[in-house]
Length: 249
Image (cartoon, rainbow, N blue to C red; front, side, top):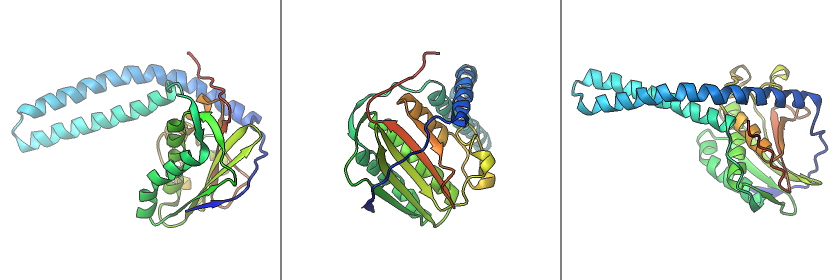
């Protein structure tokens, strides 16, 4: 469902709290890059060895044990892949795109999951389409991560709105839900890798970390709108013109 609403954001984009958060996450990126290489190689060896042993194994119990080893090694490998996206994100492939196309694709991808848990998922577009130069695939991934985070917060029922807007030279995608909200003490750490906000109803994983990484790659930002409530509202800001600032660390 798509409706139209005019919205303008006036939030300070570089408050001290977000500057400190960004510096902390950049330090974590350096740690993640080194750790991921050290962990990934042994995991790959465990997975390949378990898979090779499975080929010639006929005992059902041993096959089950080997299959479990392989599955857990691959689970670890997937986590490392997410960690690598955080530590060494891909350079955005910039192109002309529209915010409505990006958000519509994300909502379409997440709609089956929303329907499964009976959560209403709406897209509220701007009155005039917002054109920008960005990596549409990465921004779709970031928007999906925000919607998934909201779905995990609500768990069942409820409502999520994806709102598009522009403020001067910045495009914004805001995802808000009517779930339990984010505790004040968690607003500064929800973008940390492996942060668990289960006490506040949030999910576990790299969803919001991916969103921050993609925003940074475009020279943008993402933050929790603490003025919104009840529920939670997380905003993704992307410059209309490219300002990529990926680091070579």
